[in-house]
Amino acid sequence: QVQLQQWGAGLLKPSETLSLTCAVYGGSFSGYYWTWIRQPPGKGLDWIGEINYSGSTNYNPSLKSRVTISVDTSKNHFSLKLNSVTAADTAVYYCARAYTVGASKNVFDVWGQGTVVTVSS
Amino acid sequence: QSVLTQPPSASGTPGQRVTISCSGSSSNIGYNTVNWYQQLPGTAPKLLIYSNYQRPSGVPDRFSGSRSGTSASLAISGLQSEDEADYYCAAWDDSLKRPVFGGGTKLTVL
Image 1: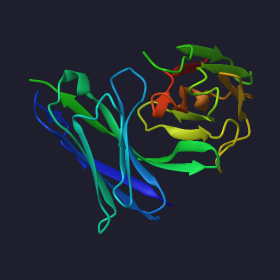
Image 2 (image 1 turned 90 degrees about the horizontal axis):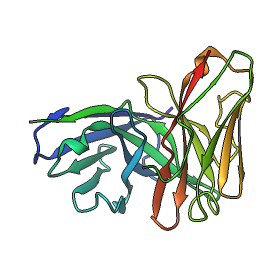
Image 3 (image 1 turned 120 degrees about the vertical axis):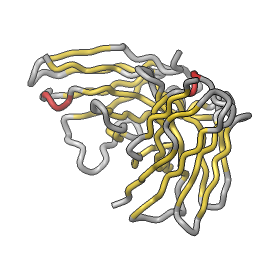
Image 4 (image 1 turned 30 degrees about the horizontal axis):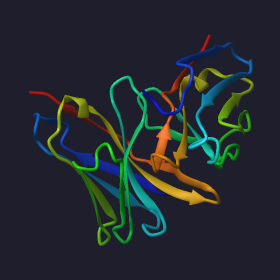
């Protein structure tokens, strides 16, 4: 079955750039949107953005100015960059697969294990 | 402040039936389907219900979902200790043009 494995730096200083990558194993890379979602400590889930096989992206407007999501189809990887981080960006970051079934958009059916990112001086 | 509103906590004893509500608006739940996710302590969320009431393969039929107007509900019957987790509702929002989540409900099995 499809598995997502993610990695990246876990400790950043304010103003640095967060960089995470997620690898897709065991399934098709095309036909889905590949997504980043974060969860601040003790809080709920927050959608960051998504990318598809052809590189088409959608971003959360509240983060759009700082976010870049890219894809490497040769490796079945997709990546997240968030620049100018602050303490407010401290969270667990998840990658996930999103699909549309019928009228249901953004069904997140496969998730990565999560990466704890802490922003502290 | 989450776009979808859930009660912060819920509880029940083993064998009981509990429900978790999720309230939204016409821009999200009112015209779009609802998905539910279960997050066990220290793990990534897991898809529990999609398209309001559909269960992915492997999810027990003790879990059921429904939607009415601008609200949705998740019901868990025959409550078990392993159901103790955080539960999140989610839906597409036509105004915000992105998926939105509830703040989560922490379910305690007494």
